[in-house]
Image 1 (spheres, helix red, strand yellow):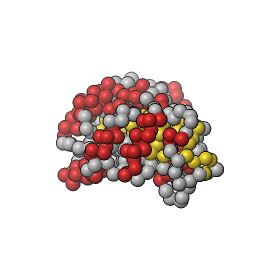
Image 2 (cartoon, helix red, strand yellow):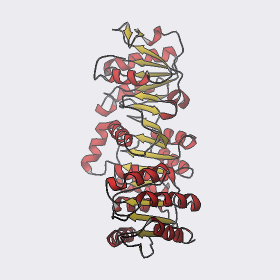
Image 3 (cartoon, helix red, strand yellow):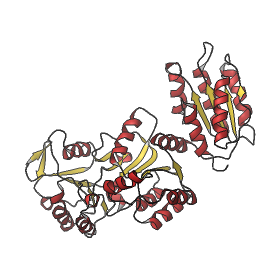
Image 4 (tube, one colour):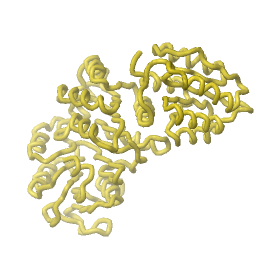
Length: 417
């Protein structure tokens, strides 16, 4: 069923429009950028975007792999029944108004049709591999190996926008909505086998089938890292979850214990979700002992304080002093990387007149390739380091301008403390 969702040959959009700022317009524009056969359905239009518009999906002669429904709630189930009659192979229901507002019977009726279903009340799905944006997200993000699964469409939109100017690359993005059909556990299992995905990032509010979810997490986390941002932890937040996607937030301690037992990584913010996803899409997790190199004593002290607070073992920071050139960094970095008891190195650099950021970046890249150990970098500054940051991130080495942010990544990168 997933091939018809992520790689359909024919797509029908029911609720297509050409009116500005309409959901049906946004989805139509996104779909028409793909190389798929797109059929637009709107009973009030003969033509849309210079293409024939059909009154009903039943008027389309060709077989339809994926039907996307983006129409007012009161018409959804009738149209979904037409999709069943048409024998569509999968369906995404964008429309809201179902269990999240108490209309449970209507959602059950939708589910009972037996068509593989994403939604309702969702943003849609994206597959960067084949340039498919079957959603009303503003644009496709960069291609990469991170899969994002979210119970919030708004968070997906924000992450896509953040990723536009950052080095976050995505394989597939899924907006789950109410999960009346295909649920989060199904997507986790699918992504566990997806050759384009190496890391799975999840924004989670709650689950409806805890055992199924736990089993999927446990199975897939043995193959690929799974990073979870769980919300709905406050009492007010729990009630908000119910009215958002109709899920139950549950007890926070139970969720955290389940994540830990399943070997999934729980983070605390969108920033951490993205930072760790990027890092793990480029590097593997490591044992606990981190080396620190800096050209500023204050940077070393802060890094050591933060790392110690997280129970991360460190050597005394190697302070190369403010006049350290790239050659000094090279000698110190190689000395640490070749040690068998050092599993990760944190490199910090601040701007001085004599600092050589681009040369230092090239040294880091060279030694990363040689030793294949995780290196986390903090070029701490602004325009002075722009070119150096580009060099290391182009070579899949993460940079974080804020020390605490880098330490948070190192904390999760280490799998034993």
